[in-house]
Image 1 (cartoon, one colour):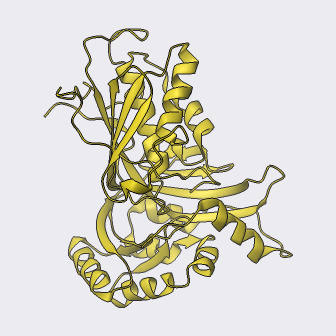
Image 2 (image 1 turned 120 degrees about the horizontal axis):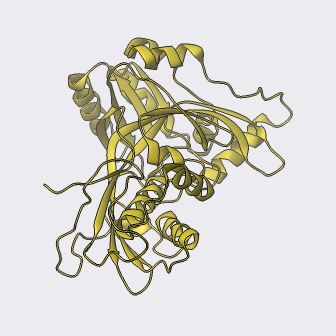
Length: 343
């Protein structure tokens, strides 16, 4: 979740001039990929897989003078992924395939394109790359799809260009791109403070099962924050803080305890802007979900369930309810941005 940085970024077809993608030899974030500088002629392309996220807690403070909000944002990466492929090109271009790809900007407002530009500028090279994003994370759905693509492009370009950029510097670039982008690089579970970009990684003691109901259309993150400001105008907004009970539930892998601790301060503004989401939340809980909440700024809604069997049942019930476009199952935690190896 971020103040205005959550943009949809799409993906393109896997064909890259008839060549088979070279998919990197390591899955370590920011790991060396061989070679130095921009010369990496033997590498045809690099693919990075990067996850979606759910905010299991999103505590929002009052608007700061710069327009952002201080957050206590507990991120959990989930097993829905975009893939970003970087291929040498004569200029920076972005293409897209997948669900709602037509809603993805293909110009330099796309976070993937901005990531390539920022990384190239740091190293004094031209951002000559074709970025192909295979989109599976809902677009403008509150699951950090745009941020995921920014992180994926950053890691893919770093590997393609043989730059070996230190992890700390990659995270600095991520923070410059947007509030959610650092977590997309890191994955797993983390507490984001500041505007969400200052991360403390969190231990998770087990797997959690989720269903995500994808709505028609999107919700603009800045508009949702604006509605939060409107709804809280004249009230004393508390300083955001992570819930000890929620952190303990994550640490122990206790699904029931996590269900009781889920919280999202942006849920009320999202429901104010899109009242129909209430019916989706009710349909999921009626079908047996342990807890339901709007994911980030929405309009995707998230349902925590007991196990994989329950996830299938809740997803089927949500689809049949007619209150959402589709329902997806996923597990967490998931790894952050990773190079996709051969095979």
